[in-house]
Structures are given as structure tokens and as C-alpha cells.
Length: 126
Image (tube, rainbow, N blue to C red; front, side, top):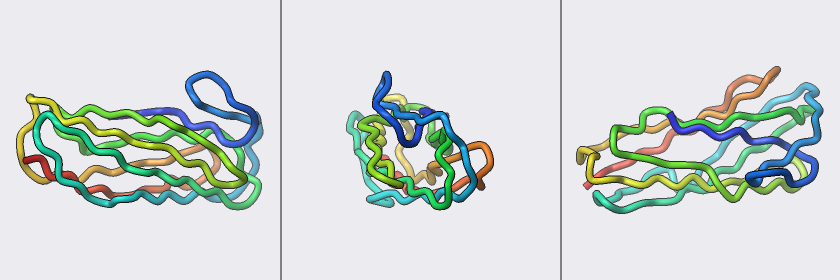
């Protein structure tokens, strides 16, 4: 599982995360672009992640990815918050250990007191 904590609001902290220490109530939603990509073994792709919150929720949100096959590595970077929207970049790298085929990856956004948000990404390895 690929994983990275995402903190909402506040000032910049280590590793590109931000936090204001609050929690509140509300909801989160998650969008990704593109929603699919084809990557050759040895290549990589980037996915734009947009996390939007409603209500007064301002707590820690954890981003993770499930469904990545062996040989696919990745990580979240470029976390930026503006108002109620946080953006990030997910980079997926396909190593020589990956088996060609089509895979469904799920990006998860979860935080205390809010319902988990999900977004589906289709990865085709050639």
C-alpha cells in the first residue's frame, strides 16, 4: 500500500504537509486526473489528486493507494492547500518486476470523523 499523510489548512510543515490542528465536522471528496494511463515497464506516470472538504472539517487526512501490483512503486508529493482544496501529485513508477496487464488502483482519503472518499484509477502496464 502506498501511503502519505495529508494535513489540511495552516502553515507549511516538513515534507510539504500543512496542519492547523483542528478537526471539526463535514465531508471530504476526492478527484483524480487522469483516471487511467498506460505505462511501459521502466516508465512512470503522474496523477493529479484534488481533495475538497466541506463543513468545518480541518483534521488530518491520510492518502493511500491500494491495488498496485508488485513492481509498481509510488508516492504523493507537491501537497498544496488553498482554502478548502488540497492538491497533490501521485507518481507511479513501473519497475522491471511488474507484470504487464491491466490493474485497478483505488486512491483512498480518510480522516477521523469523516467518511472515507475513494477514486478509481486504471493502470495498464505494457
